Image (cartoon, rainbow, N blue to C red):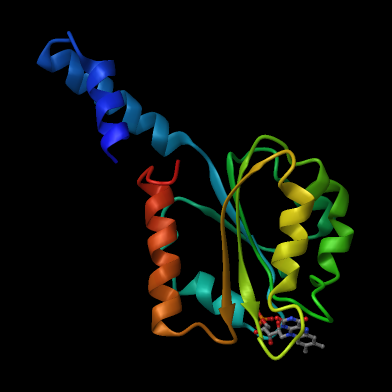
Length: 172
Ligand SMILES: Cc1cc2nc3c(=O)[nH]c(=O)nc-3n(C[C@H](O)[C@H](O)[C@H](O)COP(=O)(O)O)c2cc1C
């Protein structure tokens, strides 16, 4: 927080007040133009409910259940959030097999992972760990958010805070 403020002061130092203001506006516009998307899949509706009950601002929201695998396109986004439950001993649903090559080609992006699971299983929300392993070498993992079954109020608040921070430029 302190470091961030120092950097901004340095950048604006020596400029007149009006130039400082236009630079600040430009920075804000640039932040707004950064494109973000949430790609999610949900079988029984728990992961879907979290997405639907979150203010997702200017994120594009793509339901993978309603999208053909060949139409999935990660390329145009800088920040990509992937939501999925875990099915069958730590494995993501089948759709992720179908888009595996597209996932592997994601490079240089900010990635967030979230999804519902059930802690009675050996690999609690293991699908997120697996997708993280696929993506972390060429991207930056900005968060991994696991939650139990249907989203509680606390879950919704915590997830909303993450989204707020991304949209307000707080996750760096
Ligand atoms: C056959 C089956 C296998 C599952 N395996 C796991 C698992 O390995 N790890 C886990 O955390 N949850 C597992 N779950 C629980 C689901 O991930 C959980 O019910 C989740 O809330 C479903 O999310 P959704 O409603 O978004 O589809 C499994 C559920 C089923 C039906």
